Image 1 (tube, rainbow, N blue to C red):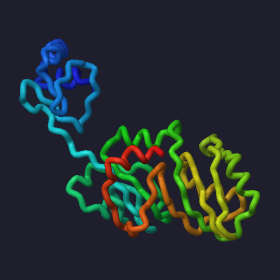
Image 2: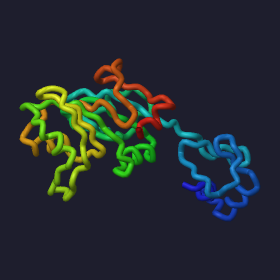
Image 3: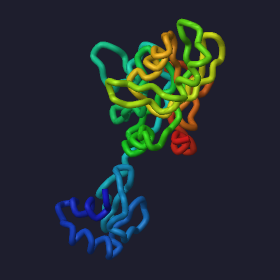
Image 4: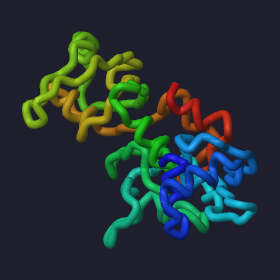
Length: 232
């Protein structure tokens, strides 16, 4: 939202009065005087008019969680425990999930109440890499590497998957890098090469790797340096 629009809505003062107040240096954003009515503002910023706080800065949350198998990537469910149930924070009700995992999949999940951050993280144009450790029922055929790199056509969505990088670690285990997140994508891709996924674990998103000292079910806040690192 633009600053002039938010100020205009304060006690219905109107757009013209808002422009005059901003030009007269009566408005401060995060303790700094702002004279540009088009200055972008959001709910995480403190706004003052004539020294009176008209918007307190909301608390921004950016969390990483080690999701165990059996936990839903959802904010609420009447039958099953969710990732939100694992979090002990007074503002957890404001969180949403930036990149879900299937109930049978474990690994790194990011949660936030910053919609702009999560939207950018999930945009296909950003091509944020997601790395998975995959275990399969049958041996992984060497030619599967090339097939994953070419991509697969999914007729249900009428799309072809982006090239995926796969490194075969041993007979039934591989590390897979995706730059998108389609419905059951990894399982469907392995099905196309005549195999079945028996275990799936997300190791990283962008520049964020699941820490070795964060056990299943545990979570922590991202550091100031880690928040932008999520984009790789």
